[in-house]
Length: 359
Image (tube, rainbow, N blue to C red; front, side):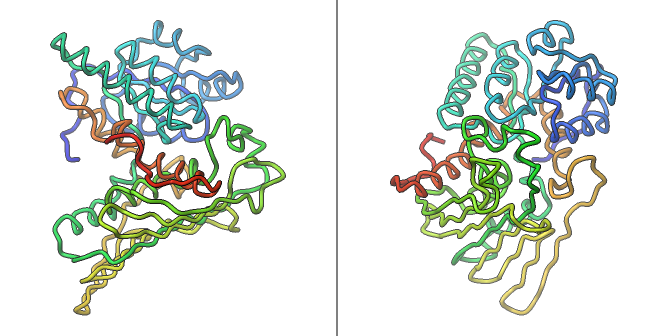
């Protein structure tokens, strides 16, 4: 994941499509990272667009095609509601513009496949013409966390020995007004789901990135607190079986009174490892290691962490490289497939695999 600093002689021209909550952290990164110029904002909501234009001083557009023609961005950040991710991303990619897209990769698996297929086609066409296709990266930024990187290294080195089992949890808080304030959040047709699609994707991604492909799923979802204002689940549990037979037990809810740190625990042959606001390794020989997480001020919510900027900076640094960005739509489909498999299992539909798209 290492890369050099931005070296373009002219600033990269950036635009943001979707001026909701998570756009704030993208806009802060665009401001803070040297060599990037904000040239446009786009949203179909006139109030959200007007507020963003006033706050950031860039031109505003109600239509993405108009933004592309008028602002001529090099990179578009797609921070729309889930159901609008793929259309906006494909519009930009087809115009030859690089894209940083928020998670999830799509709200449904067939939409994710549509994006995966389109990216493969654009890459093949570019290769045949002797040029490089526009890059696409999905914001699964927790892979850049100190704790995630160090745990990935330890697992790859074999130092931890056999993983006997794992546990993960996302236990946060949401108010009654969370869903009505942005109705799409509580609608299956637009969000694709609730907790597993909105709050848990980063944790689901780390589960499979750290421990390997998920090949079996058991689980259940329920709407325990917010049934009056939301169609989608606010609580979920699952048991994921990895390709090597290891299992991860997951629990998530947004029904707490406050936010708990995301937790991933690994019971290993040579150590017990806890990823919780940093990484703690309690070795079987009595040693304890602690790797502290980065701290940084952010205009986003505290539980988003500090790695958005690291991913965004890395993406811009790699724009001149021939290789696709490492967190691709195909790669990001893995955690989407895990969520959808839990929904199928909860509905009583057999879910033999959580990775139906070949990766």
